[in-house]
Length: 430
Image (cartoon, rainbow, N blue to C red; front, side):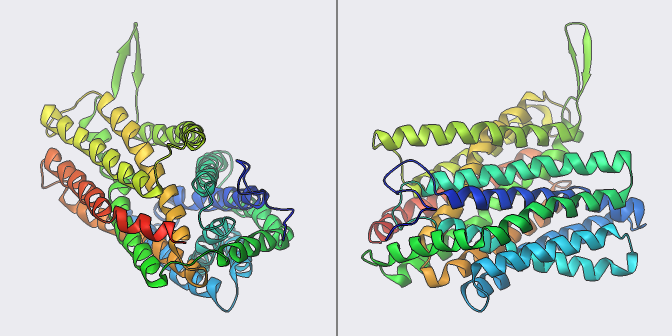
């Protein structure tokens, strides 16, 4: 049996359907990030909510969008199927962003509910479909998810820039209209490419079914363990747009004098550095993985996740040291934050992109979308815990705060290391 849409798994070439799904992800992430980046400002500056309530609403909305992935996972594995769930989710997001562009306050809560549903259907289905493009032990799987993660970050980069430009040149209606326009390519690609994606995914599932199956219960336990550890990883990663932003504002020297001229930094610049580093590091890491694969020295996906936790631990340990060196009560060099983000970036790539890859590899085909939904729900829990932990920021010295985050990352690395042989045995049995 051959599939014209899918390359031979013995080659380095990725399946064509991967680029189709990545194009859909770029479009959807650009649309969603327009809303996520500016939503608190819209609520406070345009609709008149207090700052605190605006942040609360935006946070609850983001968390529910991830938790709704549990429903999307159930529908993708069962009644609707993955491609229909993907298409319905994209349609709901498009209609929701279009409704936001009407700028009618009485539609706000219904529109947000529609957007939560759309995100909940879209996220697990598109991720699961990427995983189903590969056989159980296909060496290209990690690289494919790296390509997919790269596409997501391109969308995250484009969306806020276009949203801010629309807000500066026009008004809030134009901001949400731009998000609705971003969804058009996602809808077109999902509708036109649906059959090609289905043929590629079905082929992969049938090929995997011919392999000697491992214990289904062991694979489920492994996937659930990864979802639990995802809570820890996203608890740490979320601080890149939380406590680290506060540290940049309150405890970092933002005036730099260089060669006779003065540069004023802003906290958002450090977040932008992080986004740029993801786009720079990902191709370099993919290239290194291809070289290691050729030399048969590539580490397993589980080992990559352990490295990810260690890099995150090192990043926050560095910030703990910055606190001890004057950042607890005064201001320190911006190089501390730059170094932190340099360490966070590969850690986030390994834990996010490779984590998604490993969950789809472990999950039995009939439960793949539900377990991906559980992974995404774990992201929401980790983000919520980071927000709750942030209440201690003003009460603890910063070095203690960052030391606890680093310790949590080391716990994640230790748990994975303790289960390394067991998980690799399950993967090799597939």
